[in-house]
Image (cartoon, rainbow, N blue to C red):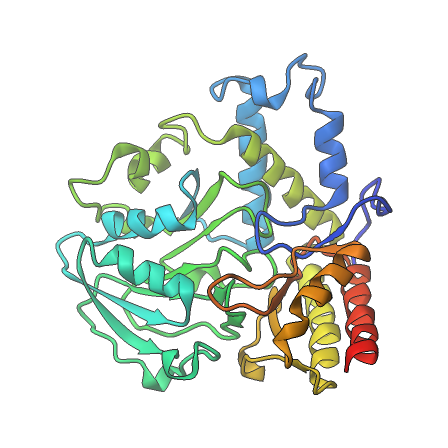
Length: 372
C-alpha cells in the first residue's frame, strides 16, 4: 500500500466488516480522531458540533477540507466546490433548477435505479429524453456511446457513473460535445481518478466514500452558475452558495469536519492513485472468487462491473437466509441486497480493508463447500 499510514490504522477486532452500501464504513483512524476531538477541537474548548459556522475555527476546518478535496481530485480553478445538504436525491431536483435556464429538455442515460430516480425528478421541471438505456437486459451494462441519441439543444446530459444498487460503473468518460455533462458520482467519488474538467457538474452524497450522511458535495463549472430558474430557492442556488462559500445557510458542519478527516486520511495513503490501485485489487479478489464458482451468480457485464458495489446471487435463493446468518456470525454485516433486486451486495468502499474482502471470499468458499 502506498503512503504512510496514519496513527491507529490497526483494526479493532471488535468491529465488524461492514459491507453496507451507505451510510457506510469509515476509516478507523478517522473515527478515532473524531472521538479524540469530540469534546475539545485543537484546544478550542468546543466540539466541532458546537462551533459557529461563522467562527474562525470552523472556517479553518471548511477551508482545509475544500483545499484537500481540490488536491485529491485535481479540481480545476474554474470549478467551484460546494458543501451542501439534501443528498443525491435532493440534488436530483436541485440540478434542473440550477441548469435549465431557458431550455426545456434534459437528456438522461438510464443505467438503473438511481438513473430512474433522476428521470422521475427531472420530469417535474422539463421534458426528459432517455438518450440510452440498459433496461433491456435488467440494467446489467452501460449502453455504449454510439447508441446514445443526444439532443444538441438539451440543457445538459445526466449520467449516474456508478449505480449503487445494480453494481454498474462507467469505466470511461462520455463525450457529449458542447452540452454540459452532469454526473451523480455518489458511490464512487474519490475511489478512482476522474478528469473533472470534462464535467460541467459532479455531485454526490457523502455517505459512501467521504463521510457521514447529511453532506452533499457539488463541483460545478463557473460558466454554469447563471442558469438557475427563478423558482430555485436561495439555499439550493449554486451561484448564491458559491458567493457565500457554501454558508448562505448553516452547512452540515460536523459532516464537513469528518469529510475533511477522510480527505486527510486519503492524502496520507498516497491520494486517489494509491486508493484506486487498492480498490482494483479488492474488486479483482472478490469477482475472481465469484467467477470461479457455479454456486454464485454475478449479473453485471464484466467490463461494466463496479469496483465499489458488487451484487451477486446464490443460484438457490432458498439459502439466502442461511448465508446472511452465517456471515453475521463471522463478523460480516450488511450483505443483503437492495430490496428492489434481492440477492446479496458487498460494498467495498475505500475504507473497507482488503482483510474484509478476503474474509468474505473465504466465507463464500466455505459456504459453498457446506451447501453446494
